[in-house]
Image (tube, rainbow, N blue to C red; front, side):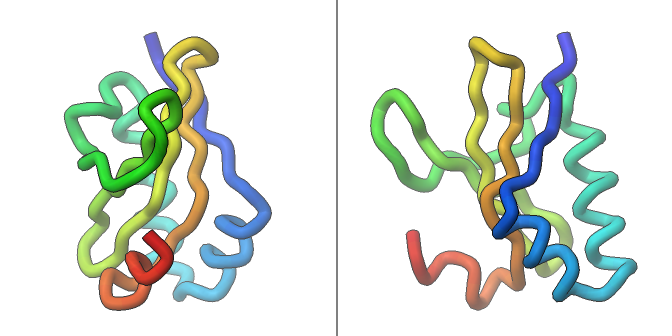
Length: 88
């Protein structure tokens, strides 16, 4: 059972701001966790029904939402680990 990966418009803008190599590493990493996403993420915040997760890619982090009923991984935001958690 593989999950699909979708990107919010904010996430797409974040990826465009990063270097090509870092953006490619993030995309490849997300494609690598499609089959078992909960093994590679940590829960950070959210409601009981809609928690948010973080996934580590080198010095960068991505904020994810995972919807089990739709088999969907939603990339919400991506950025350097020093700045990404300020909103959460």
